[in-house]
Length: 231
Image 1 (spheres, helix red, strand yellow):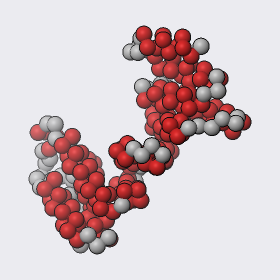
Image 2 (tube, helix red, strand yellow):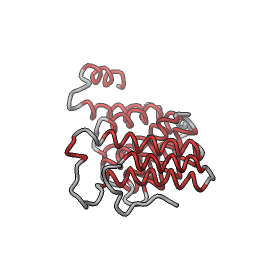
Image 3 (cartoon, helix red, strand yellow):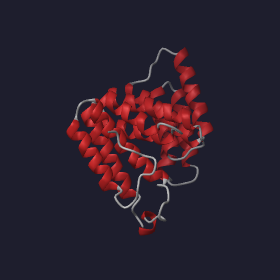
């Protein structure tokens, strides 16, 4: 049963079969009428790298079970099931669907779990998965849930953090004269452009200037190429 599988997994948490055990535990929990527990195990299995197809098939089974049962997911189960789906879709390379799932998770974390930091991280992950318009979508999600002033602050903070993460080696910051900005640099510039645009849109002129100053400071050794801050 569930207890035996959990003891086995706890005894060997780093074993190659630990992820498969989590999937089996999820199956057992659902069979025992514990859909929220099953959802939590699925999310953990997905986080630990379980095969995306296995996670998605079990998520579908859980959703089908819920349609035919009187039991419902608790708020933590709803969040966990959405996280499992988002991670599995990303692992399967379904970038657009995964982005939608991460955005849904962000809204659930904000509204149900009151996890503001987790919600922001989910919105950011979604923006990175989108092939086009990721920074703009991220900015709009932040405005919807946090309001314009907090959204601007978060965009600037994210841009600064991404710059620090990419500055591990000197060679990563050196480019040939006239070279176009790297994708990472363009993304950082885009985040700051969105911050300045939001500030302008909402009449926050001082914040717009701060975002522009951050854009100049963050990459003052290289031009932004085609990126331009709003007038």
